[in-house]
Image: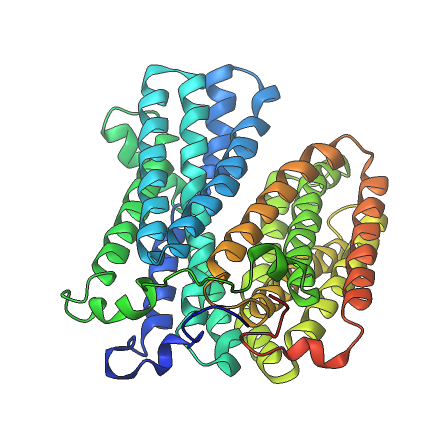
Length: 427
């Protein structure tokens, strides 16, 4: 390749000034803390919007705007990372998310739906930082261990995601004690969780900070743009990058689609809210808990087989969903498989993305990947909601087939699944 680019050297080989080996554990801890704020954008947002508007017809607006903010935030965070300030970008997303939570609390106190929706957009930027954190863990380890590092972060996300909705009652008590509406409680949790994560990331960006500052080699890098090097458009056209980005979008499209249909589908067959909640909890466990094992599979057998496995599992989940008739064993299997398919797809695609794109372009592509996931979620929710349950599941099944076909078509050569960190591409 032409130009004077510095070699794309992983930070773990950077010598005595390189990052500390505990970076993946630090990232996992920060992710778990930030994950405590996840329920504010979903559970509390839907309920609060309904309460402020006095009608359930607006229930989907906070979620849609939250996802929109997440997609936009991913591009903002990745832009900072591409300039050599990954930690600063991640911290900025968390700060904006904390600010969004505060705006929602003030809006709820004043009874303003408009400001509540505006705060939901800002809140979504913290989600983008939360999920982009996984790439920081992958960057800090050798290529053969990236899947396991990603899996560790996803497991930490599960801890926050499971605990977050359980705080609805206790946090509501605190909110009432402060003279605020009960549903503000989870937003107060989000403010503290996102704000605390931002402080941790800011501290980790400074080499002068004891212990945490040793992560600065990963969170702060000074990359000079190369003349005549690989362009972003060229990197995005690489088969492995196409499959990774498509798998990220496809996995989220199918999973969000299933979770849009399923609660209504179950309620229509007589399932109570407690039963629906329990089944959704099993789905969430399927989404995150197997991540360390899936990461090991990606490291050992390659990311591409993991992505393909995820597409097949998602297809089976869609078929079972179309024929489920209520809270049966088939429905339980369907929801667990839906979560598992998402896990295989996202962990496999994230691992493939770290292998398929040169390090200096990777932040841009990571942000594009998160933005495509958010966009897919925004598109699918109203689409499947307008279809009868059976046909919605069949549409999602067809998308899973298309995803598998794309992967097979773009990766005809077996060796493509284990690309080097810096693939050879035309300049």
